[in-house]
View 1 (tube, rainbow, N blue to C red):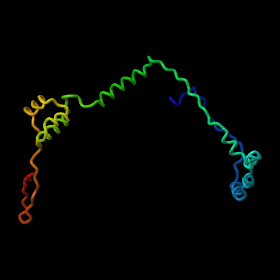
View 2 (view 1 turned 90 degrees about the vertical axis):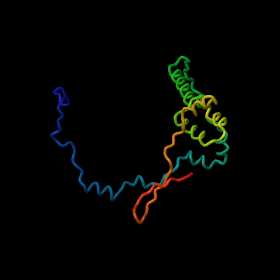
View 3 (view 1 turned 180 degrees about the vertical axis):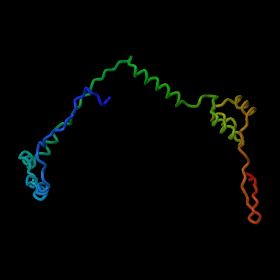
View 4 (view 1 turned 45 degrees about the vertical axis):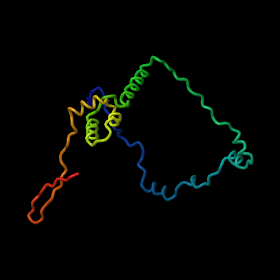
Length: 170
């Protein structure tokens, strides 16, 4: 596609348009830089006059701050973006809402059952997890906190090399 015949052929010039500068010319420019940059910087007359004015700071303090006018924005209550933002707000409120009454996630249920197994005030526990007392009894009747396993340590006999599991009593 890029090699189409409808495009004009590029041709390089046959003659040299200007002479190539010699290397000695560039070396001369490095040795003798132009003197226009060596002149000391001079301030304009207006700046010098302002610097000598004793009432300059008083005049500066009289200047008021810049006032920026607020730009008018076109607001249409039927705008589609407003409906999108309202929908997002409702979604975020639902997501950020407190835990629903009598609803527990699997992780919360596991924590609830562990706390109940450890003992303590069941009524206070039900209130902290937002669970009815009657529902808590049903949960206790049909479920139990799973026990991963009994804690143990490994004991190695250095003489014989035997490995033994020793159950840790809590």
